[in-house]
Image 1 (cartoon, rainbow, N blue to C red):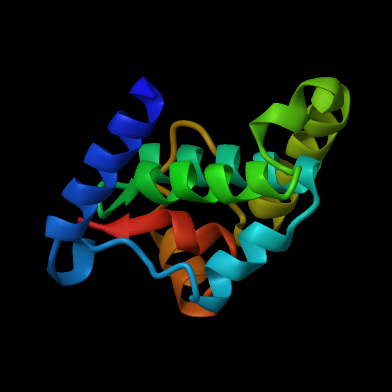
Image 2 (tube, rainbow, N blue to C red):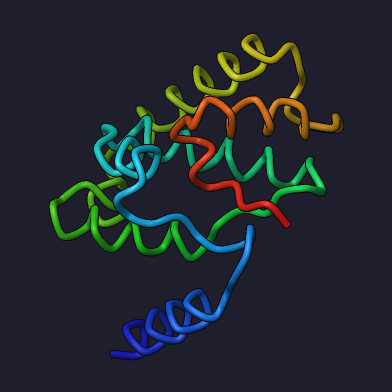
Amino acid sequence: MGRGLMMGAAFALAACSTGSGAARSFEDPAVQQLFNMPTPRYFATLKVANQVAQNCARYRYDAILDAELNERRNEVGRGTLTARPLTAQIEAETDVTQRSFQGKHGVELTGADLCPAADAEVLENSALSALLVPV
């Protein structure tokens, strides 16, 4: 029940946001890509999106959307509740996703300004971009 109250408060705060910093709708194609991903790829994408947001002052990581997606994925058996036995697969997929992102954009994920890469992901409307909110 406590978690439900926290989630409700988070969604209420999200509803108060306006302008470019507002979270994406669940019906957004990029959000749907995330929702439909296999579990290892989903968690790898979350991690890379978080790393991108940490290294770009123009975007923040959408923790509210992350929580909403996890709740919905848990309802269909693909959220954090089912991820524990997949730890090795998630780690392997994270390595692949990080390398792919770095190769695609010609960047390192740590210590670099990732804003140009983030902008490119947003223009592409990639699944990763669904978790990047302009500040």
